[in-house]
Image 1 (spheres, helix red, strand yellow):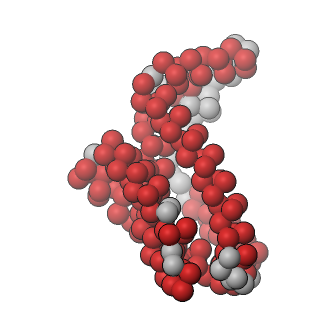
Image 2 (image 1 turned 180 degrees about the vertical axis):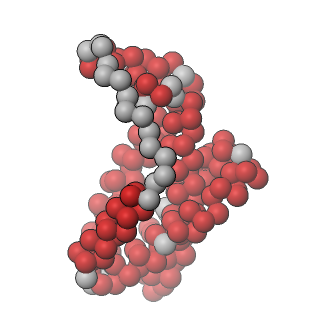
Length: 176
């Protein structure tokens, strides 16, 4: 079922991509060496205060969240004694906040501003991540679904908005 669902998502994604109206121009081939381009990009990122902050913040976020996600499954199996199905259902429900985030992000950014959305939602997502270890064992699924739902919504806001902002303030030739 998971493989079929994943395949269906790729087919749907491909169909959406085929319906994109505008096409980007193919970039001119670079005349410089890749090492020089890489160094130019790194220098730009660390010289630009917003990019430097977002790069460091996102790197730390990704490091710790990857570790947490790996340990989380072990916790679900060894401590909560959940089956693969229970884990799948809880994680699917908890992460469904991503859909809500996608539906309301644009309106919230227009109202609050992109900077506030990145900062507040990043903090909220991190704090809500404590829902897993803080959940009482008797009601772990409910607490994890609720905190995960809100946390995944906040995480969506933080991630999408910081990526959009980084792309907006980076010169086109340095985006790659």
